[in-house]
Length: 244
Image 1 (cartoon, helix red, strand yellow):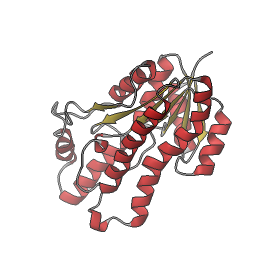
Image 2 (tube, rainbow, N blue to C red):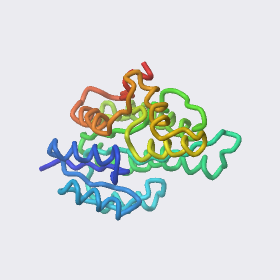
Image 3 (tube, rainbow, N blue to C red):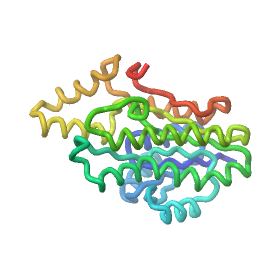
């Protein structure tokens, strides 16, 4: 019987690339996200995947979603959100929302799948964090705080389940060709007057390779962690050497 993987934030970008890769590796895949319309669009592109609406920051929504999809062998916590602002202009609402989506969502979804994994003594949890889990970036304090929290959660849970057949790891992409980076480029253009190509080059410059990471590169790393039983509690940077 095929192992079942759930990918949150699976409607586009890294989530869709991870789902495609896990399908190719022979897993059964369910995409989760807030927008069923977006999930169904990705479902049409990928083919043999299931979709399930879920707001990862809402406890009741997570409980209902995971009850609906059944046993989960692989969880990829990919749902995320970012907003930019100086800390002095960051509202409490934005702060709490970014912590909720990026950090609490990983906690709630991991908690939902963990009992089954522990009972089977087999499971993989992969948290898609960010290089913002490994270093600071100006004007995204809430996002950095949340992603640092994801890394702390990863390391603590990895130790908790290390002898129980479950591994927990984080993947930390640098600037990646996704809607989030497209939004960052648009924000730079709006606030600085630079062209889109200039803004894109500015983000790519953070990577010593001088380019943006592709979603498929992140998906390859996730797939490797899903296969690897001896890798646990790690933060794997996919950033061309930015954080080395």
